Length: 404
Ligand SMILES: [Zn+2]
Image (cartoon, rainbow, N blue to C red; front, side, top):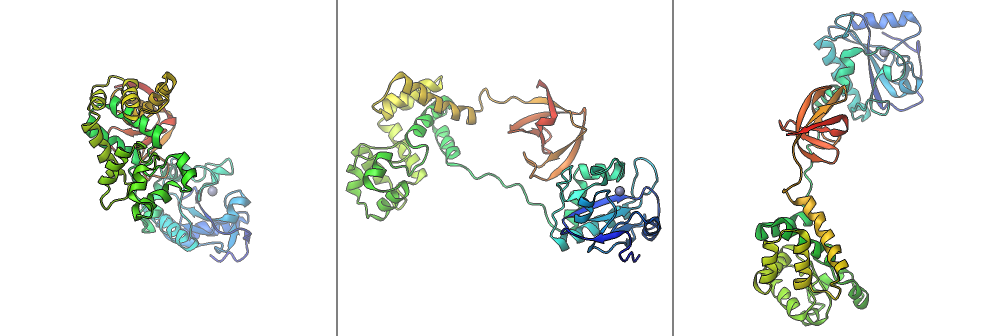
């Protein structure tokens, strides 16, 4: 249908959205367009018939009168889609649905739009009912938007594979926990030791004692590089009295032993320092190691490290408490003992997306409904992992029923 300038205005905004409507009748695309043309008060950019036929209406470069909102129609390309039955739940034929998705994919590609439904007008997929008290686009289309189906199907039609969830890189902290845990076999002991390492170096293996950064005029990285390339000679490194590395090794014989392990690695290499730390504990500090391996509290383990291994000037009760509190953070974060217990959660929202990972940036894999209950086996922030392994749900919209 050639609408010309009939039932339309010049666009004042770039095209950034797609709005799918339902025609609330069963008809061909051309008949839907004719009905609007005659009505003199309505229009759309495209009309899709129940057999999947697509009829052009108002040209894309003009604003159609479709959504009861100038704000939306100025930004959106709008479709009217025929229903397959003119009653609840306002179903659409597979052919009409497929045509709408293919057309939307084409528009998204041409205008650089990422299809995304947010449930409000901020998304790139918007609905008539966001702007006016109307049933449009009807239950079927509304559910397919809300469950993420429309978004997913458009992406698939664009032949864009949604990005896979990116695993977090292994942090130094996690690396240190795993290394020590495999050797100490006691979570209190590992946490107590790590709390002290944190106090010494904030777990940065290239850490140069702060007072020496000033005195030598070098940053952590500069000192490390100078030792590595020999411009800061070995004997100076050993004898300069500067605390360095994960445990802030200071005394000359300890720094000498650390340097001896360097080989062709950096003096700041984490793996090398962990091996050195372990060597120290299992040779010259057997008593400390035994205290870690048999610890029954973070405080006990932490205090053993403070008084036997690190031995700083301040070994007051306040310092013991402080270091133990650092260790407790690692215990809470990594220890599997006494931590999370699976529980059953009931869905409180009408519909809730299940996503591949704990966050809205992960793909939607399914939808669950109000009243249904699921066992949560893992938590990550506000997200809970379903026991079935299907995915994660946002726990904000659930109620904890009981532990399992
Ligand atoms: Zn509508």
